[in-house]
Every structure is written in C-alpha cells, then in structure tokens.
Image (tube, rainbow, N blue to C red; front, side):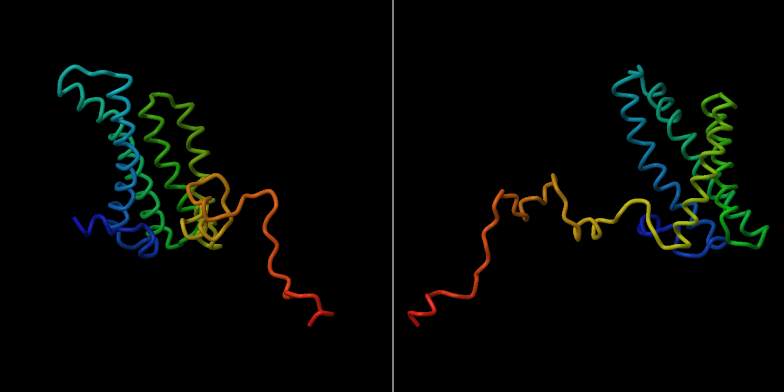
Length: 176
C-alpha cells in the first residue's frame, strides 16, 4: 500500500516507469471520481439496492479510470515510439482521454471539443513543467504571501491606524 501512495507521475522522466505513472494518475482519478459518485448516489440517483449503487459508482469511476489510463498510456507510448519527450506527447494523451470522454457521454461532437481542449491543456501542462512554473501555488508559496480572508488572517494587523514604531527618543534634547 505504501508503494501505491508514494507513486508520483514525475518521479521518472516520460517514457519510463509505465506502472508507476499508471498508479499515480489512477490514484488522483479515484480521489476525484469516488466523491462525485457518492454525491450522485446520495443526492441525485437514489438507487435501490446494492447492484444499482455499484452501477452508479461504475458510471463515474469507469470513464474516469479510462480517461486517466488512456492519457497515461497515450503519453507513454507516444514518447516511446517517437523517441522524443515534448509537448506533442501530452497532446496525444489528452486526445486519447477525450476519446473515452466522448464515448462515455455518448456525444462525439462534445468528445471532439474535449479532444481539442484536453490537447491544449496537456501541451500547456508540459510547457509549465519545462519552464518551471505551476498552475496552482503550493501551500508553502501561499503562506509566504499576505493572504486576506483566510483562517491565517489572525497573524496580520488589519487596524485602520497602525501603531507608530519607536522614534528613538525619550526625552527633550534640551533637558538632557
């Protein structure tokens, strides 16, 4: 279990460690799809019986697992076959995932639009990796900045007039 939890997608370069990359993407997929399935079961579908509940979970987890798997496989095999580690591999992975998405929602037109969107998103992700910037800041980066309206605001002074610091004098110079 520890092996599964410690897998990260970028531990090794693209084109290596297919199993580790597959575990990493499906781990994040399950973290997204399982809560969505729970919300569907509890708030919308209201299935009667265990088989109907399993079917509702499969409706969410199945396509999401397929999308994560096809993205990883498409990216990995395009890297291995082409012999290059570039943005096109992520675009191919995004198009592969969009094919599963289009089939899952039974609408090829939206699947095509998703293919374009996922390809662009994949290429932007690869550019962010190559150039060293992130889409979302980490917790450490957020803590270093002055953040308003969070639970951390007790650390900051939001008074209208802040206290003036010590001026360095205590008495009248003529009296000293």
